[in-house]
Length: 239
Image 1 (cartoon, rainbow, N blue to C red):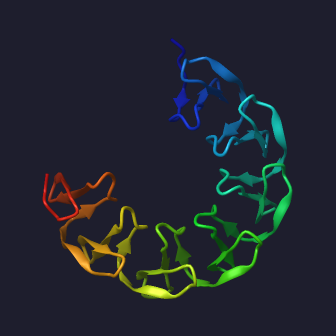
Image 2 (cartoon, rainbow, N blue to C red):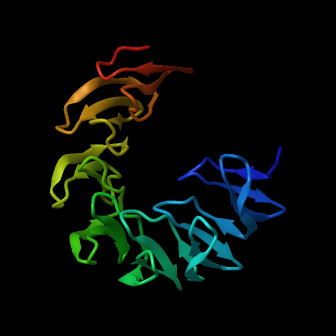
């Protein structure tokens, strides 16, 4: 069997692997489908993968063919047809043939989810659409991408988190010490050192009786009480 220094999970049928300091991709049969010739790589998404030669990033297809030239200082994975890239510390977005769709003018940019992308401008975060129009004015100290219609945001000072909708309206007040994007209609929130779960109305569905918690997946979430981990369902019953 082939052995590698580092390997990552499969994405779109290919997995990143590293040997002798170089990265490439293998198929599920273990064969090296894209030679290990790159200095860094990111998983395949929407048919393309970012790979690095020297100090520049470009993009290849699943045959290893260069599709977008190696000229970017930073790169990410494609999402909703666009990808965030940077040149000289400024981020923007390009399409799958390398056309510049949104100018590189942001201090940082996250990938698109639900048609919106978080961007940092003037040390504040807001959201743009795929035309580059600023839909939610940069005014937050930190944000997370949209998930299930809501995005988690934080203000300066109090370090409290809340949630906004696609129009930028605060739908869950910035009162939580910690939280996470919504999954399966619920998310965990932390008050002080205690974790519980709320729904999109802000109702406490599972009381904050835990010392740690994770996201719901397939109807279950992990929770921690003392040094022990358990699973809970959406009714708060421990498994």
